[in-house]
Length: 167
Image (cartoon, helix red, strand yellow):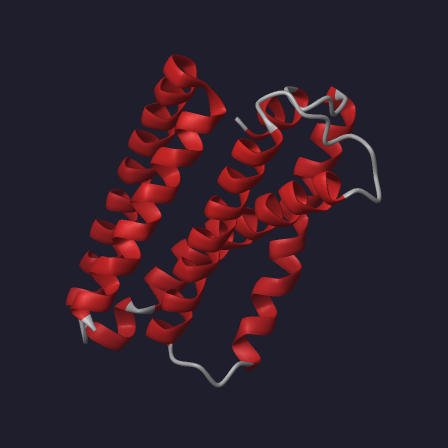
């Protein structure tokens, strides 16, 4: 979806692929640095959820303000930076959030039940990830990237509200 999103905004396919490769590597460099933060696991999840929500809303605003086929290919323009910042933030969250949620298991579960909890949570993550990917792909096919960004933003805002209610 990301490469298609960039290509519809006049970014060459090779450049879109290079950007995707970079955004996949940056979180792997940043993730080990989280060990040195003094924040709790749950506060990091809230921060990452807020980052994902902010990045999705940023991408939606850029999409709506600039139009469906505005060029994002010219460097040094705001329309070059904003989508890349949003996509990099989403890549960071999509890499870190599953690791953080699994790191909560030993904190919550003790003893032999922790291994079962790891399996259940990981299975739920894979099933959720596959379902969301298929859903977002069908939404994008039906209504374009704008509708996909609207659905993503709504889902993330609702998850922020749910986290607020549960905390």
